[in-house]
Length: 113
Length: 111
Image (spheres, rainbow over the protein chains, first blue to last red):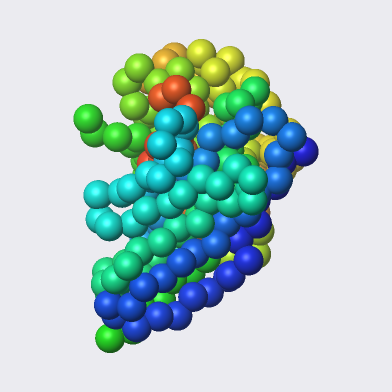
């Protein structure tokens, strides 16, 4: 069975500071990896994804994540956060043999001025 | 592209009433998913369809819940009768190859 672990339920950080949101997964089969962001009272928006190719993937708003197969991780990073990055961030994996996504429990990023 | 469309965005009803949530997937997407999100249980997959056929409904909480997908551009999730514990945000998502895209959700409150 597959599982996704987001160890940090909340991450408080000051504006312009760097941040890393951790995601580890467990799977016996190949997976695709995703980060979704949920702003207050909104749906989940795809932030970035790894399907194949370069293990470092980037979003349009400055986030990046690196697929590390040996450590089964897909941590999300941003070198300098903004107040507007305050949101819930969900890591998810999709096993190769199914259409279903397995979500982590989410990390609430709170950016303070 | 308009994205996944859900209606209504908010629904307030009384216990025992029937509730119908609607979803229009992104054109060309072959799979459609219904999720429920609550503070207590997080994000739960209720059911998903592929080419309009239900593939996995193991997440549907009980017989009060039913879902249909009569064609490639429309799906409904019905709760009859509704109960206060059904209060949640219900999301619909559709999938391009390997990637799910979510709608804005329907916030359901059952009094």
